[in-house]
Image (cartoon, rainbow, N blue to C red; front, top):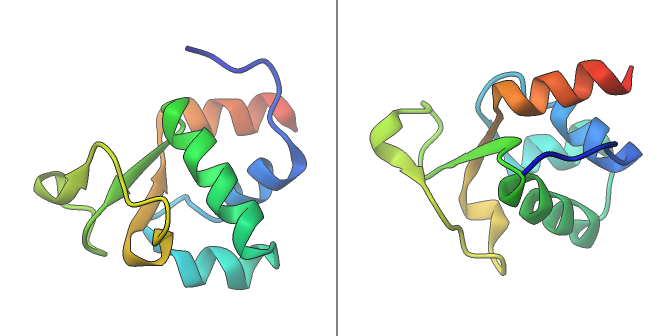
Length: 91
C-alpha cells in the first residue's frame, strides 16, 4: 500500500526518525500532541513507512509487527526506505 501525500505532522515525525528513536524523542523534536503522534505512528506503521522496535538498538530480533496503541511510549521507531522516499517526495 502506498500513500500519495503525507501530512505535515507525518513529515515532522518521519524527519525525526532517520535513526531508531524513542517516543519522547519524537515528541521533543516535533512538539506534536500525544494523540497526533499516536495516530500518525499507527498510520505510518500500517503504510510500512516506519518500523517499530522493542529496544533502542534497532535489532531486527526486537522488531515488532504490532505495537500497543495505548502505550506508544514503550516502543522505538525508525523510518523505512518507503518512509524516507515519501519524505523526499514531499519536499
